[in-house]
Image 1 (cartoon, rainbow, N blue to C red):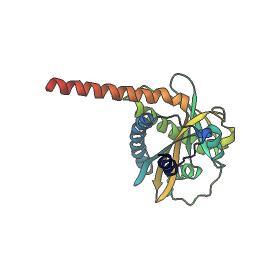
Image 2 (cartoon, one colour):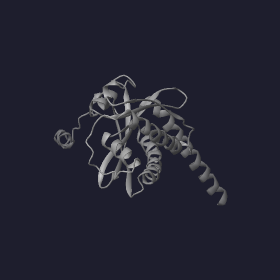
Image 3 (cartoon, rainbow, N blue to C red):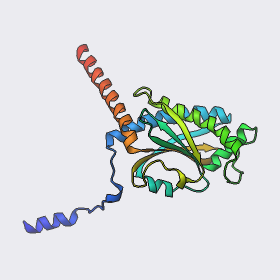
Length: 226
């Protein structure tokens, strides 16, 4: 009997648990957020295809949980980061696009080819003003992707090219980074939305509540039909 217990223990796989990266999003919360992100990727595709007037691809690729300090350390310099307020709390989130993508967008809007042959550099004031309007549209689509579940109103606040100067929350606070891949002329670029988990959770819970109520109503209708 003792030998069998020892054999069972040997067969078990030991998994390391990193307490510094505690996952706080439950599976149903991730699923609910994924519904919103899939909707958002379709809106982004429509907008950028119209903006570039050519065939592009937009795909939702990941939801990553991390500490805010880890996110900032992973960003290059120069970068393109806009902070925005979301909801009624006034808390900040941020939207990020690769500097190469920003320069390509501006080049295309001014009648250029929009091909990836532009050296990466900090944006000028003119480029910053042009992108202010683009980011406003992108944020309105982010709000639109939530509209079936909760009313969200995002307002653009600041722009920064140096990630370490963006003080959204404490470096140790948990954030959720949502990434989308945008393919232009066979080149891949990332657009991401990073938001504190504490800010995002009420929105996700609204998605789950609405989804549950719809399922409950559907089940009730099915019972009446029977």
